[in-house]
Length: 161
Image (tube, rainbow, N blue to C red; front, side, top):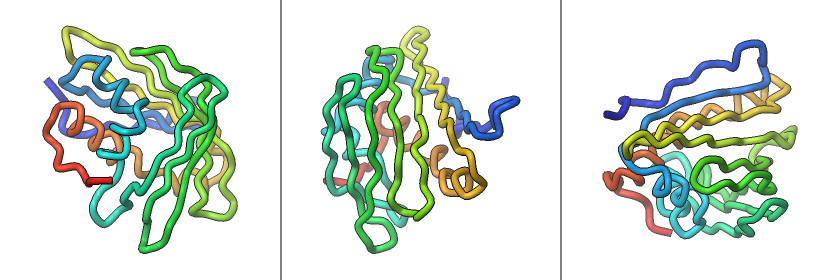
């Protein structure tokens, strides 16, 4: 059984951290591949009226670089970083630095996946959001997790690259 939406809770004692959790009716391997495989990620990460991915470059290894290009508000933007932890199908973490606001700092995104009989709980932690503008500019994670769930469960009308 899946929840209707991603749940957000500020990490207790860490005002610089956003945590979210969602249940996805798909095995952890499927969910991990949707997150880690750039040819899959470009198909589900984005939504009408929000942003549309136009390309992803990815060197999927610890220390490898990644960047996702997209259209946002009618203009080209990107976000990128470096992979930190890759433990298929349980953990994926990477640094995150968006270009869509001037004072962006490098932060850390971590996905922890737990599979229970083919239902995967995805726990997202986005840490290092040290300023109010950092926190305000990263409110899209619930939508991203819902797009991931729709894709992994095979229910999405995903944008084409």
